[in-house]
Length: 213
Image 1: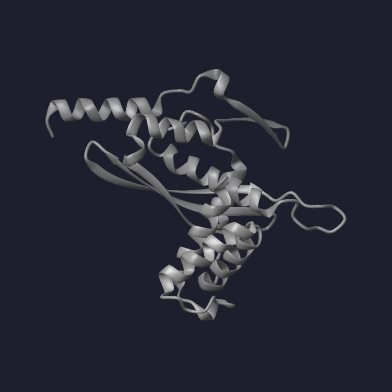
Image 2: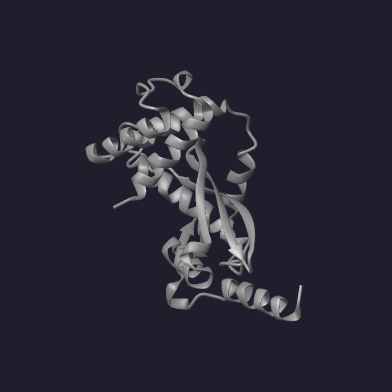
C-alpha cells in the first residue's frame, strides 16, 4: 500500500470516528444511569456522507425475543478505499407492555429499535460513535444471543410477527415479493412450507417494508 493510500484510509476512518456535535447527542436514563447516544438517523447520515450511499449497506440477519427484550442481528458491508469490509452488530430493545394484558404496546417499534441499536453497534466497529460508552444492558443481551434456538421456527415466528403489523398495501407488496422468489408457489402457512433461505428473505423484506414510510 502506498503512502497516499494509507493517508486516504486514515482520513476515511478519521472522518467516520469524528465525534458528533453535542447538540446531536441524546441522553437516556436507564436504571438511574444516564447513557449518551446518537440517533440512528445521524449515524446513517455519517455513513452516507463519508462513504457515499452506494458504498455501504446493511442487512437484517434476524431477531429474537429474549426475556423481556428484542435482540436483532445486523450485518453491515462497506467499501473503504476500494476494499470491502463486513461488520456484524447485535442490539437490543426493551419491550414495553400493556399492564392489563401483558401484550406489547407496539411490537414493530420494538423490533425497529433493536435493529437500529444493532446497526449502531456494527458501524461502531468502523469508528462511528465509538467514543460513546456502551450500556451494560446491551452487552448482557449480546451474551444471551448464545442461547440455542431452532433457527427455522424462530425466523418464521419473527416473520409472522412483523408481517401482521404491515398495512394491507404492504402485505400485497410482500405477497408479490414471495411470488417473485418462489415461482408463484402458494403462500406458506408454516415454517415447514418454505426453506430457511426463503424464510430469511421474507423476514428481511417484511422488516424493510415495516421501516418504509
